[in-house]
Structures are given as structure tokens and as C-alpha cells.
Amino acid sequence: MSNLQVQLVKKPDAKYPRVNDIFQVKTVSSPNGNELKDGEVLLENLYFSIDAAMRVWISGAKTYVDPVLPGNTMFGQAVSKVLASKSEKFQKGDYVIGLVNWTLYQIISDTKLHLVKRGGDIDDLTGYSLLGPLGISGLTAYIGLEAIGKPKEGETVVVSAAAGAVGEIAVQLAKTYFKCKVIGIAGGPEKCDYVKKQLGAHDCIDYKNENLSKRLRELIPNGIHVYFDNVGGEMLDEILMHITDHTRIVLCGAIATYNQTAEPYKIKNYPRLIIKRAVMQGFLYFDHPELFKPGQATISQMLKQGQMKIRYDVQNGLEQAPNGLAKLLLGQNQGKVVVKAKSEQPKL
Image (cartoon, rainbow, N blue to C red):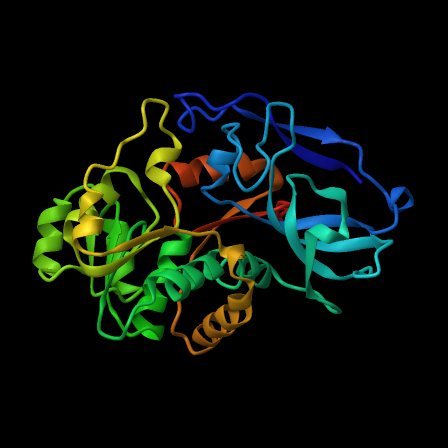
């Protein structure tokens, strides 16, 4: 079996992601089941999640995962199939999810994986769903709202990057599950149209073409109760001028800062948190494993009842994963970016 591998060849500079030359795709030898040690499995990696946090991982900064350094194989969350096993947890044919290398085949410890299906097969849409609404994107949206935002019925929730993978789920949860008034923020009329007409937000502010503060004053004269922040930077600073008493700010992402090479933007309006007795808290979805099952159950029910719409921006072939990441960081994606590891072959 031929095996592809995506490696980081240099740290991103000021030109990245517009100049996408920091990865290389290599053909390497494939591992086989004879090489397994106790507690290990041989995987075929099928579907990869592309997430904005990867931009931080490749910068060399130490975060909640080890950084990806030049010469290292890139990694990310994926749905994989067990081809061979010397594990007591998993058997051949199981489908698992975990943080794996950007490669078609690999040997990995069973401690890094979670079972998602035993017996039978999964189709593409199921694979994408396990990375999107039923996986990291959905759980991040649900846990951010449930554990930190704590929206009450009738309150106003504002979601930035509302057309993105996490944002689109946060919008729909806030409106349908929590029964709140929801205002999205997105870049461009096409994305705002999607947020309003498809996701059901009460309105959406096009920050690229509209004055954010003016529109917030028009739409929410009494202030924001919950702000689900995927952007950070100057937008977060501006939002602080529109909070109300006891606002809860959910710090989920800071994509506005990920590509900065100059001095980071400094928040100036933080005294508003004191005046308004507000809370601003960051989180990682795996901080709350007790919310995994209720979150997946809630989202699954909404999907079954047609109350949640999800878009996937599918990159066809593992070699397209670097392009998928650049597309996400440039804001050119349409929904959750996923990679189908083996590209479709044209029918003759």
C-alpha cells in the first residue's frame, strides 16, 4: 500500500496563508500489522478535520498540544478504521476517532483513540458528521453555551464567525435549543445571507461592509447577554462596549490574531467587564467530558428533526489538506472544512 504523509517544512511567515508553501506531501512506506506492539493498532485514516487552532500549532507555540515543528508530520483529529490490532480495546474493523498524523496509514497507541462504531461500515456523510456536529465542532458550540454562556430563554446571543464550523452550530443551538434572540456576525453578504436564511438567525452583521457598533446599537439597544467569540482582537474589544449587566463572554477562538506577525492587538475596553459585572472565560471542549453525551444527544435530535443545517467544505485527497487549512484561515471556506483522505477516482 502506498502511503502519503504531509510534513511541515518551515514555520509560517507573514506571507502565509496567502502563499501556501510551508507543507510538503511525501510518499513513504506503509506500516503493517506485523510491526504492532501490545496496546497498538494499525489505522487507515479516512476523514480529517481542519480547524483554525492548527494555525497556532504550526507557529511553534506550546499550547494544549505539542507544537508542530519543521520536519514533523502534521496532525489533526480524524475518523479512522482499524486494519489490525494488538489492543484489548479495539478490534479489526472498528471505526475510531482521535488525534492522528496527516498520513493515510499509521500505527498508534490505543490510549489516543475513542470507539465510534463497531461492525458495519460508515459512509462519507457519517464520517464528516463525527468531526462536525457530532464531534469537535458541535461539542465546542454546545459546551461553550451550556457551561459558560448559560443563555436564558429570551436573552440575546451574539455569535461571531457565525457562518463557520462552530459558529453555525452555536447560532442554531442558541435559537432553537436555548430559545434566544440570535445575531450573527460574518464577513460578506453571502455568508450573512446564509446565517439569516439557512441558520435562522434574527439578523446578521456584515463586519466587512457595515459599521459593527452602529448595527449593534440598532439591533440590540439594551445590550448583549451572551457573546460567543470565535474571532478575538479588535472585534472583541468593540463588543465589550455593547455588553449589559452580567454578560457572559464565551472565548472559543481568536482567528483574527492567528496570522498576526506584528504586535498583537491589545484589548482596551476590559474595564467594561468590571462595570457590568460581566464574565469572560476561555475553554477547551475536552474540559467538560460530562457534557459530551448530552451535547451529542441534543445535536443528534436537532439533526433528525431538521432543526439544524450543516455545510461541509470537502477537500478531496489528503494532499489537499494544506489547501483546506489555508482556505479556512483566509475565510474562503463554506462551512466545516473536512478532508476525505483518499481522493475520488473519476469513473471511466
